[in-house]
Image (cartoon, rainbow over all chains, first blue to last red; front, side, top):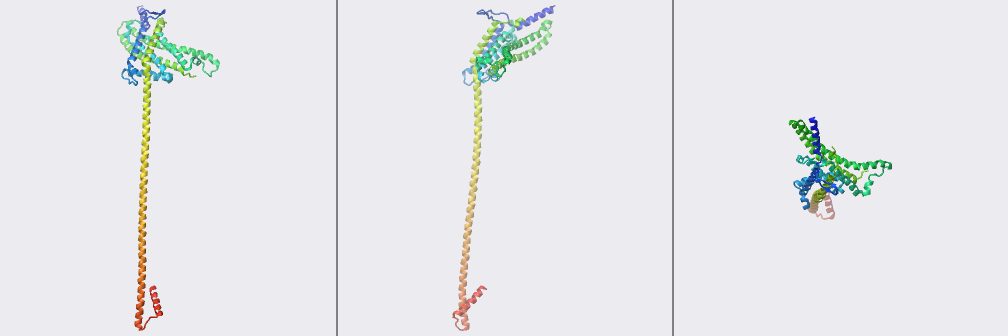
Length: 267
Length: 164
């Protein structure tokens, strides 16, 4: 009986730890509830870290004609070079790369920073989950940016009408279009939806797993269980670092693949 | 569970606000300048490598040309040497021939002179012998053998002796 009650508590605690906090600072704008919650703060923190990091690290690039990177700038240059030359240019093409690289870089740096911030237990001092990117509202908003970027990219490359006409490939018998066009329209929506769920679910799952593994310590009220739980959690934490990197990479890569597909229509 | 999938317009608003502020600031101040610098550096490295390649190629061509020139000069020098050698040989042979001819000529001339002188001497001896014979025969016969017939007779007999 007690265990059951305890188990329910554990479930609530875990859920509480991976979901957004209640309103911390109530705020309203034109009737819209824009109250500050923990995920908003974590998002701001990620944005502030990325912005200050890049602004401080790239002073030389704004001053000098031919800057030579050193120290932290080397790392930033590696990130920018990787996103630009390994992700954007191969998918989007050299012609539009300079236009789309900043967007893709913003995805990568913000998601990666938010993912890593969620791994730092320090932020659990504030009630609520620490990973902004585990919230589907956050990942959905970002995926919606990708959704709009695909339309903008297609319209810039083929014209507004041309982009929508690409849904119906040339040389296909017209009856097939009745199947093809709905599939294309569905794909348009499914892709960002998949982006949303993949990132949010991955960032939530690891935290749930870690908390669930720690739970037996309290359920059994036995410190010896902690040896196994903590050892296992250390391993999962390393795994989470990889997941944080991989999910930021996947979101970024798929976004540029979708944008590239709208520019280079294959059929 | 529903708190995991709760729709939260405020959070969506803040996500977009944060995202686009970060994007705007960094695209303007950091990422575009960085990408431009990277591309410029790439182009510079590319150009430098190309220039180095070109310079290497040029120097190789130059080396080949110089080597070809040296080879040609050497060939020419050899040709000149061979020509000089053959010219010298020709001069030597010419000189030798001329000298030999001259010597032969001299020898021939000497022979001719000797022959002529010997002929002259023989002729003189013959005349002397005829005179002597005649005077001796005259003295022996105690009579003058001055007639043309006798002289002819003796000369003929002497000629026979000379021939024998």
